[in-house]
Image (tube, rainbow, N blue to C red; front, side, top):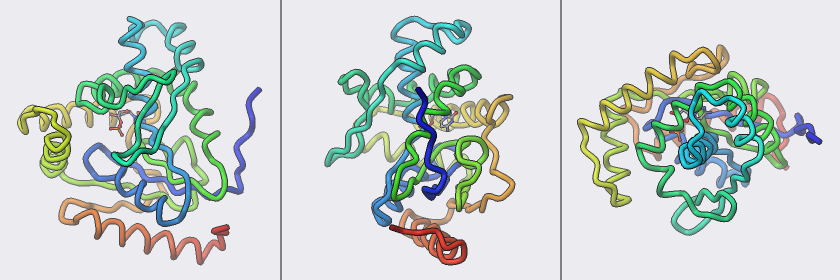
Length: 236
Ligand code: DC
């Protein structure tokens, strides 16, 4: 039985392409507010990982639907960040790789996968509030979010950020190859027919190319505070 999400719980939607810092910002804002987080990209990454592992191709819609509906994906907060677990198996490193992102983008185009994950994402809307990051948080999953922020940055800057981030985690990646992969993934995410990566009509677009994380956090928190004050969204 599906439990309906509590629509009175406030949601902050943070969307945008990879490398804009949306995951980091979502985590910081959620911590500051004491709210929950939803890293929707991690869900797509986990399902794509399982599909590849079980040899379920993008064309096998029945197999994908069953997989997306049945697999238990959990997030565990550790000192090193959030770990992604499926059936108690830690798959964080495998899914956080560039190959993991590429596979996620391929499987994320398939309507049955998105449909199966839609309710799971909406069910994560629990008190006192949710900060959700992804591609379609403001357009499809939480269209009634009290604030929708769409983070942008030039492809070059995003590739440089990812390069630094992945190198820091010990992945041996080349900047050129990253730039190419980011461009390909952008193209795929922006041009798919279901839930494409576009800002919601009522989203506030922030270009982060020239800003560091601390500045973006300040900008987003200012917007949050203004909205919470003007819309009288309760923080309790
Ligand atoms: O945010 P991320 O890089 O972890 O996302 C990986 C891929 O998953 C992304 O390229 C497209 C897909 N995705 C999606 O289609 N919808 C979302 N809400 C989040 C991610």
